Structure formats: C-alpha cells, structure tokens
Length: 195
Image (cartoon, rainbow, N blue to C red; front, side):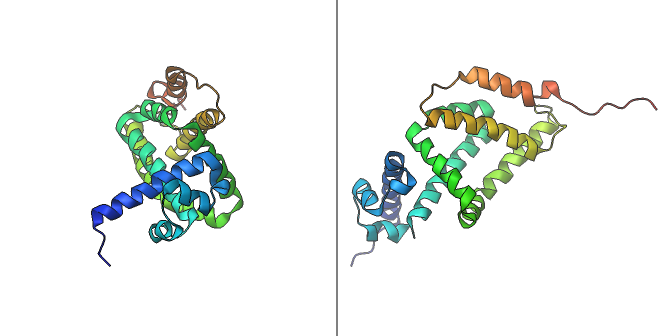
C-alpha cells in the first residue's frame, strides 16, 4: 500500500475538520451521528477515526481552533478585533457551543479535557492583560483573572445572542461600554489618605 505524504495527510485532516464543523453546525453535537459525519465529510468512519480517536476528539479540536483563533485576534487586534471576529462566526456553529457549555457543566472529564486544551491561550491572554495594565491601557485595581471573567461574560453574551439569531448590537457600542468598564481612563489605583 502506498504511503500517504504529509501534505496529503494535512489536507485530509482539514477535509475532516471542515466537514465535521458543517455537520455539527447543522445537527448539533448530539445529533451529528457518525453516519451523518461520514456523509458530510465524504469519508468512511475508518478514515475519519484514523485521524481522530472519537467524535468528541474531533469536536474538541474544532473548539480549540476557535479558541486559538480568537486568542490570536485578541493578542494582535485587541477587543475590537475580537468583537468583529465573533460577528463573523456562523450562528449555527455558535449554537453548538451551547451544547458544549452544558456538557462541560455536567461531565467533569469532558470539562477537564476542554480546559487542558485552552491553558496556553489563557496564559497568553493573561500576559497581554498584565502588559496592558502596566501600560495604563486597562484598569489596574482588579487582577487579570477578574477582568477576564468580566470580558468573557460580555463576549459569551454576544455569542449567545448571535447563536439565537438576534441582531447583534453595533461593535462600537459594545466596545465603548467595555472600554468604559475596564479602560485605563478609569484606572483605579487606591488613593492614600493622610494619616
């Protein structure tokens, strides 16, 4: 049997991921059966699972790619870039994340696998926030984790709004409110009162 080149393997892997993303977006995670994945991808289950050990692994790879993409946008273009990026996501694909959240809440093993895939991005984003705090771009009276929780709350709300088909608010409005909440102009270094 002829050996498959690395380039062909990478191409096949991308074919699998693209088809799986379409299938998950159309049917949801639970509804994307192996038979539906085979039809959408155009490969047999043997070919698909030669590259990914399970449907869960396939889904986690797609989720990790999205996390990486959004993290890179944040590092390169800041919050405004992230807001635009979220608005570019397919609402059908975003709705699959609602299943992901439920599964992470109810399945500790799945949550651990998901979190382990995101660790490097969390650390890179935290370092960027710390750098922005030192530069006075972001308020410094809260730790980076607390700021991240707040920003994620807003971003996740925007994703849910998109996933449910609602029209998103203008990026400028959301960005302005975020900047008002966390921006350096509202820097809060505790003042010292005379003794």
